[in-house]
Image (cartoon, rainbow, N blue to C red; front, side):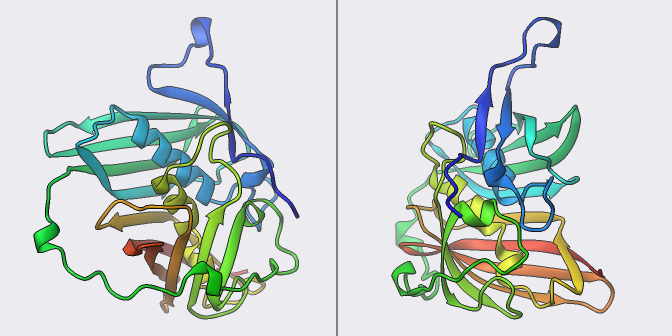
Length: 271
């Protein structure tokens, strides 16, 4: 399937008595955001990228960099009309906290928080980040598993180095957006990072999707430098515990090597 729609289209702001508060935008989530399991719900990759966009636009300062980003999933994020808002929670010269929220029909469905830290020259103290993955040119294109719904998975170009969606065990893959996060805008590297990193759970699945549900309730990204470029790599794995809990995690890469870490909490239960 060829996906050409952006994840989101900007909508005109509300006016009159229904006017949106400052810092709020209205967007329309297209079919490109659809998750592979539910026809009426988004994969959390696109909303995560949209929340990053909101944080980046919230009183930006060039001397500050986003270093940590966490999304809390409050419910299924529907397609269609949404509002996204952001604000500075804790201002500071060297450390500040910003937050963002996506709401559907007035109900919050996802919230994010990000720490922005001051840029300083630490090149002399920088440590080796670990080995790089082979590049996307070394990966394979693998068809989406039968029965998975079109949308988000088709809106990304995937190159698999090991494992693949629908195969149990750890996985290593590169992903690149085929569509903008918001129509008419070039996605930033951080938006690309968030859109791909939410696939950590899928890339590292340990269970049969036909027999088990293992859904992430959050996503946290830590970076040790600013991400760069279009391709984002996942070196992912997961652990399933004996009491309905699990974790998925990955080392995040870009074309220059490791850039950070991703982690997700999983709720696990039989179908």
